[in-house]
Length: 227
Image 1 (spheres, one colour):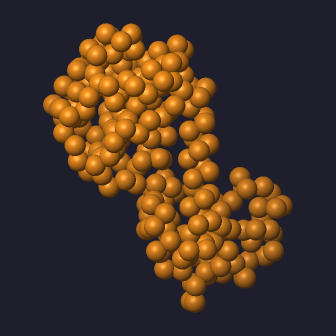
Image 2: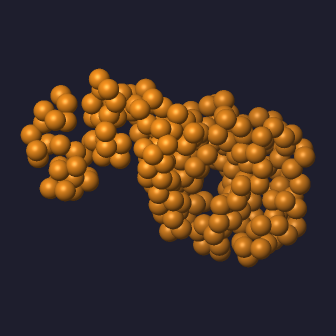
């Protein structure tokens, strides 16, 4: 049914004002951001079709802004609004990590990393620096693109931790293939950096491999000792 054919209380904007944003479906919220559809396609149908093709909100939120703006019927004006809204969601997810003890709940870090880096088509490697209670200080992206793990130097990993006055770090990197299974190089790098961290008094608590197909914690796999 077209928005114009809905009763006033069931139209997305009016429904939001009367019942609150939590009463709207994902498609209705997206329709509010888009405001108008295209010739032959109502805005609500356009929003639902977009979500269906993307694989749901979880996939759409990882979309690159250029992909958003290039979609038919979206363009620059609508695309910047949608991209800005999705970025606000990512920033809120980032801030929610501040109260989490990340060693105990690696899923919390994975949720954020997937939102922030899940759309990347190249591998991204970085660290989470943590305080003495294993709460997040900062998220660091150290490099992206093809690079042999043997080339990653402890100095680039621990320099940011020293600047942050961190007590520990969690390593992370993405697998654009969608398969989070760690390689032998992933495990070797983890052990090498853990050894370096012990010399510096900065513990490597975990190494998270994040992909669209899930995640793997190398600590849970036994590559790093339980803490």
